[in-house]
Structures are given as structure tokens and as C-alpha cells.
Image (cartoon, rainbow, N blue to C red):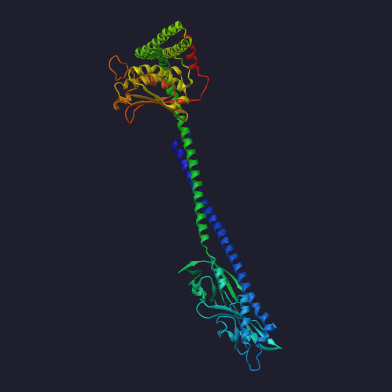
Length: 598
């Protein structure tokens, strides 16, 4: 078997090899992830910029093509040719020519439409001052004289730019004038302004002629690039790297540029590097944890084997001693089991004694409860005899009905007393809480009236609740709690006892409160201790609340004593809730037994 040091050395060597392999593999994975992500991001940026470039190329070419074809078409119309005919006095048709130019400019949305004589004299134009400027006019006229389409990019200073197309007008083969159409780029640049990318046009001299950035217009492209860094452009006061996509417009000798922001490529690089690094770190940690767990398992197995050998020797040595001890313990267990049996029997007898003691305390009040209806029965019987002598049979029937009601009242009290006094069974099941409290109050009210307490209130929610327990033992619980409250209320003005209950999930909480002096704070933890009492000698032995606590615990519940903020004591009983059921063994057994006894 390998030693612990050898195993640890072997695993250190394995960890070192795995770390080197992990580092190399991680570097390869990170590099590949970064390259792949950058290529995808660069392709995506270039694709979107290319789409923008293609769309703007079509838009610009469409605009220029429309105006490029206008001068040749106009120069061939007879109505245009007649504009260059002078009258006998040598006067030109200036008004008709201006009206025609305005109509053409309005319908074509051109910046201006102008008519010139071969010597450069302006016949008429539609609007603006473009035609009145002499910029590039001789070149446009000369090219038109040669029968070619003249074109020229014109700048009038500031931000005023246009592009002019010219075509010669001939009548009877003679060159009589020139039609020049000036293009308006306002709408083109306005459309470019909606794009987040820089879009601009440079001429063959490298000057920015059109752009969606006003500060770039009519500036040399070299002035907008960082010296030595042609890919860095002047953006909002600083040089930033951009990807330049260019499309050549050979007809105009212009270059259309779209600058794309390469930041998504950098973002993709950082993101890919971070994700790949984290993934590699996570994989490395998992492998390290698995390796460490394997090492610990091997070391633990070795340790367990060594420990098992030691334990086997110890077990052999102690088995003999335990055999002797077991025989001694078996005898002690039998003795303890017998003692526990006697203790439980004594406890049951003590509970029964406490019930009989409670009945003894209530005997005077119960005697009054019996004497009072007996006296009434005698009175009603005497009256019935007199009514019979007089022949008043209707009155006799009323008296007999009253006597029957009093007898039923005494029988109910007798049944309750018998049920309370007999020993309860051990059966636990669903029992009606309202019935239990009614029977408890039937036994406790005579004592309460004897003590001058008439206000015992039961909440309406009690009637509909069922709890898990035994009917007789639960009745003993509430008899003890109500009697305890009656004893505490002795000498209290407007004394009252309140019993209420509520359902909380699968539990039922019952409260028994009074408005007496309450319980001293230092005595609260001891009220459920056996033989603890605050009553005088001969008034109680202090086992009532202890028995209540034991009964509640047997039913899987709890009981807590506390003081109310407004004064008086409060006992809170927490029991398992149950559903209404006709199968209540304790209740049925009590009814049959007491009925037979009566």
C-alpha cells in the first residue's frame, strides 16, 4: 500500500502536467475565439456599411442621371429653340424664356435652369444666382458648342455647391444657344444626415464635395485624416479609427465614401476573449476540483482502512467487556421498565384524582344546581294537584311540561358529570370543539355563579371547528382552564371570561382569557410545573395546569401562558385541526356509557 506522502507527490506531479496542458489549450482556444469573433464582427460591420454604400450610390446616381438627361432632351424641343430667336429689333424673348425655365425647374426640382446665347449672354433663368455666376460657364458653353454634354462641379463659396449639365441648342444646323441645368444636392445630403455613419463624396482632386457632416464640406480629404494614420478621421474634434468603404462614380469622376465604426469589432474581441478565458478557467477549476476530490477519496480510503484495522482490534478487546455490561444493563432495563409502568399508572391515577378534586370543589355549586330545579319541580307538582282538584287540566299539562324540562336539565348535568368523572380512553380522533367547550362550561358555570361570575363568553367561531384529540381529556383541559380563571377573578368587579378560537392553516388556536390580576412575570415560566400553586393552603395542590400541559402534548399541541396588555391572563392552546367526521370514538363511547349510567 502506498504511503500518504507518495500519493500526495504523485498527485502534485499530475496537477503540474494538467496545468501546463490547460494553459496551452486555453491560449489556443482564446486566440481562436478572438479571431473568429473579430472576423464575424468585421464582416457584419462591412456588410452593413456596404449596404449603405450601395443604397447611397444608387440614390446619387439616380439623381445625377435624371438631371444629366434633361439638357439634351430640352435642347431638341422646338419650343426651346424658338426662345433663342431675336425680333427685328434684336430683342430676345426674355419673358417667355424665364417662364419656360421656371416651369422646367418646378417640375424637375432642379436648383436652376438657365438659357445662354453662344457669346455667354444670359437669356433667362428660373431662380437663384447660380446662372448669373461666371464660374465654369465658358467651359460649359464650349463643350456644348462641340456637341457634347457639358458638366462641372461648381462652388460659390461657403456651403453653396451645385453640379451643372449643359447641352447646345441648334436650329437649322447652327449653334444658337446653351441649356444649363443646375443640380440641387440639399435633399441628398438631408437623407444622408439620417445615417449614423459618415457619408461623403470626393472629387478627383481629393476635395470633399458632398457630406452629411457640414464641417467636412469643401475640405481636402488629407486635412480630415491623421498624419501617418490614414484610417483615423477627424470625428467631433478628435481623430478616431474608421473603416473606409469607397465606390467609384466614373461618369462624374467622383468617389463615394462610407465610414464604418470599427468599435463593434473591438467589443467582439474583448467579449470573446473574456468569455473564452472564463470558460477555460471554469473548465480548469472543474478538473482541479475533480482531481482534488479523487485525491481526497484515495487518501480517505487509505485512512479508513487503517482505522478499520485499529477498530477491529479495539472491538475485539471491548466485546468481551460489553457482553458483561449488556447482561447487567438488561437487568437494569427490566427494573426501569417496571418503574416506568408504575409511574404511568400513578400519573393516570393522579389525573383522575385531580378530576375528582375539581368535582369536589364544584360540589357546593352543583348541589345548588340540583336543589333549585328540585324545589321548582315540587312547586309545579303541588300546583298540578290543585289544578286537578279544580278540573283545570290545561294548566296541569303546562306544569308537567315544565317539570319535564327541569328533569332533562338535571339529566344532562348528571351525564356530563359522569362522563367527566370516568377514566378516559386512549383513542384520538376528530372531535367537535364547540361541544367540548359547552360540556366544560356546563360543569364550570355553577361554580362561576357561586363566585358571582356571570359573564362567560364563547366566540362564534368555536362552533364550526374540529380538533384532533379525546373528548373527555379535552373537556378536562377546558374545565381546569375555566376553573383557574374563576379562582383568579375572585373579588374582581365586572369579572368576565372569554373563550375564542380560530383556524390557522392545519392548526386550531383556542384562547381562554380573563380580566383578573394576571400572572406575575417571574411566575410565568413555572405555571405548568407540577405542584406549583399560588393558592392558599387547602385550596389546591398545583397539578391542574401540569395535567393540562401533559394532555395537550399527548394530542400533539402546545399551551402558552401570558398576560394581556389590558390586564388579565391569557392561555393559548394550539391543537391539530381536523375535519368534521361522524366517526368520533371518544364522543360516541361517552354518550353510550353515560346514557346507560343514567
